[in-house]
Length: 214
Image (cartoon, rainbow, N blue to C red):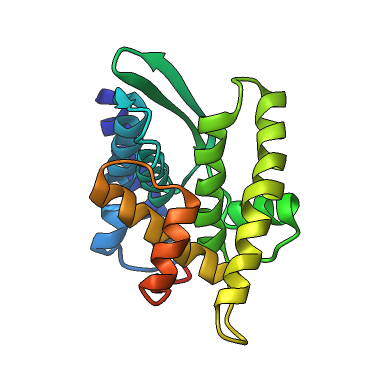
């Protein structure tokens, strides 16, 4: 759009001014900054404007869309599933995410200290739970978050800790388990409950899914 073209010109001009004031040469990365911002904006717009219909047994797909927004640098502030013909329309509200948003939020909910990439995966499970069980109100989502912590997160974290060898990180084990559940769901094209996913994860040798710190 015209606004994006103006932004790109302004960013390039601003980078040139900064380089000149510091006596530095302007490199290709500086000139491409406006293009990077444009690509990120267009990616965000695509994720937020696409009409996504999710079936009753396909809520695992929420993770796909939340993950893409996280990769673009945005935090998902709210998840809604709106009844529609053939399933539910997925609506996501995004905001710019602070670098430690997810780990801070997880600590507030559970008192668990986790790396940002671990917390991102675990909170995606909370979003899944909210979309499945929470009434569409702030109080409903607050209650769903407590229910998730007490009935889902804490019992599963304890089971995972018992299943892992001594000294292993149960929080990383939880993210490994979530990834395994997601893979099973995508392969089967339907949601997988935690019991079945846990049994499968243990039977498969508790495969890991390490994610690099950013």
